[in-house]
Length: 285
Image: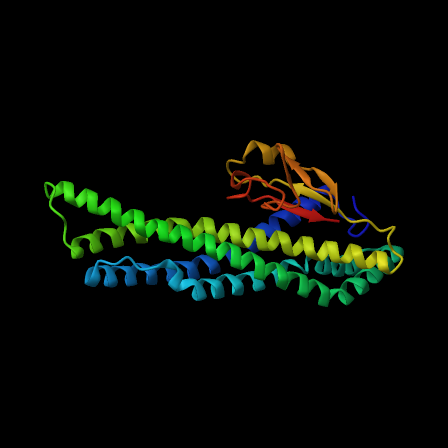
């Protein structure tokens, strides 16, 4: 157990479940915004292709996507980069030990003075993350558009004994399939984006606090983190085996043969198979 929060393993697992439920709400908000954007892309595709036979470019919607992702990241990171602050306030309120209250109040004061630095680091992460991920999402969207149209033309041509189908029939059939494919993507995208934002928010808060404790000659207080694999349906074996793994703040977890600073972290080379649909949590104490 670390030196900041004095909570049991059961309490840590309860916190992990709480964080998951909090993420669910943000995921729903992002999924709705993405669904509306994808519906607009589908509608615009249908109109343009029917009139001209031209497939619209997904990157025309870059500004809208960047705004959607940025707004979500800001909201999520503002919330999850204050988890230790909220937990310290609860500890001060509920503990019976005067020594623990005094120590917690001192740590909280340092953390509150670190808020400006935490915000700046969060903003830098958001800019990089949104730029990178919006490009990936739009590239995949373009692939969906191009491949769906190509497949539809082949399918309709076979039905017409080799004749070239008209633009209207291609637009109608392709539009339905494009909307279905993009709808199927929304859940995975929103879960991944919110999950990475929440994990990074907690990590930034903990790392900044650790640095500033050292600058206040409180470097004897060390933050630890624990990997919590939640009991939710089928869990991948590598994450189940990682349950309860404890590391110092700046040390990575070992997940199978990969290193991860937090659940859903890909910065050290973990593949998408260890990131997508992960519902694990890291708890800092």
